[in-house]
Length: 532
Image (cartoon, rainbow, N blue to C red; front, side, top):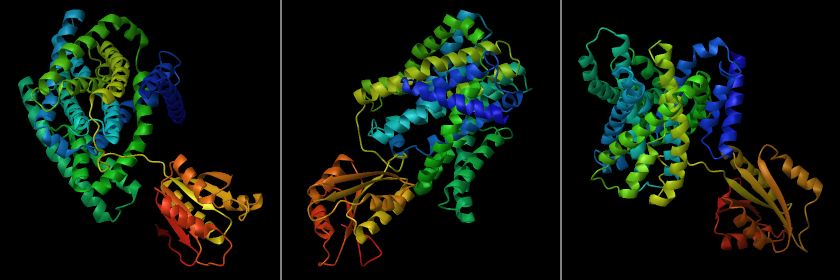
């Protein structure tokens, strides 16, 4: 099993990076990596890996839904009225109806199997949509009207509907003793209970974290959050609720009640997802039979295309009718909700594992839908967003904005400049930032010796840094370097001894007067830096 885990991580990471460099979604490379190491090609994975693959995929789905909930914007959703609710039901239902009819017409399957495929195909992909929409939010595209939030909320609710109906259809096929109409009647109950239990879970996470005194400790907070999400997954076996919806609501409740905790959780959950997506897509690729995909060929592509054009497109157009969205924005909604990957990867193999008729073909068409729609949706979103969406302000309380902090330190060999370097190094370690160290000398000041440079760099050897040496006017070159390197802060020493031959006192005063960037002065007679 350890060897299998190593193979999955290595192949998934390498091929994912390769796909990314080619301009494709990384998940496509991971998917093909799974096919490569699967039993139908190289057969490198052992049986224990396959035995737990379903549980792994389910847990990773929990991670991405939790992350989506932590990024929703209630104000933007409220401003759109019932549009998000309509987007959660109408497009997926219409796409399912069209896919089922197309499958019946092209493949001649029984209606239950046609609808089973429809409920798998209709689900939008959190794995593709969530990162894309969070990226748009972090850049401000469509934020004024809350378009990314609409796509996130509508897509996740539609996933809950799709997975719920998929379970009901499975039950109708295999038989569980419950009347079909009673199962259909459970859908509103599943949604309502999902909302209620998700809210309760979010409140409970906050209570446990505060009661245990672990607030501010990222890893324990993450364990509590994911642990509660896992309980929601397990509880679905005993209570009739939508576990997917409950998990997303849990994240949303945490965001609304404690934005500080939500920000930390978003960052940590994002790290888990970076590893989890490799397992998710490599494992689904590993169970795909290439021969079956080839045999579906044109028919599979036709079913997927008809479902998107006549089902989802029309459904989204109806859902956004008489909303505040204009024509171009409604067109973008269609593209934004088109990618398929996560749900298809998570449930596409279930019919095959249960021995249901056409199970291999259902899985093959599910994977084919990923291969076709994931790159098209990713490309379409990246291309269309700047062209059709209005750019608004970025709300850092709803998204994780990744910044690489860069600090400039001016050195002249004096004691205070060494103190400035130590203070900047302390902050850089906390923020995992980068240091730009500048030594400017002229006729009065001397260039730092190689021994002195080596000694100074020794205290920052664990920090990304660059050492620059210039000759010329000190303040001018410091300001020019700070601007060209786009630094966040300038650290300098400031001596209070007027008899000191160092120019740093005069230079620091000049830099403070002219710098558009915050300057932090570290004086020789105080422990604390002074921000000017």
